[in-house]
Length: 176
Image (cartoon, rainbow, N blue to C red; front, side):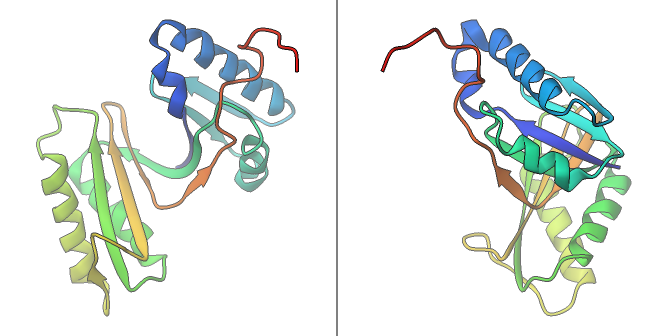
């Protein structure tokens, strides 16, 4: 299933105000996406938007909302090794590249394989199944990212820059 991940960025640096900022960002996104059929789930690190509507339209709206560091359209799979391997390989096969790198982020520390070892495992799988490619860890054409979480795993390869900053409505009044 395709899902949109919202990365907060600098919102997490203000620990005392983190919940206020995340809740305001959530409200701003909900208002901006009024009229679209979306389900928005937030936590301390990410916001997840599930939809059956046009993802590209929604991403274009999200790019202009302050407080969003980056936007990712990801594939969500169950957190088990076989599902992750199959999805990662399918995603890589649908992309044209000569050099690549796999980065794994393992938020679920109960996952039995370390991040570095799992990146090597997926990289090896891709190398064995796609012809005429090689690994380049310093300057790859293609970066496949895997976020392993307790509930699901998110696989993506394109990160879209957001407007950044703090959400509209959290700062006090100012005079210029």
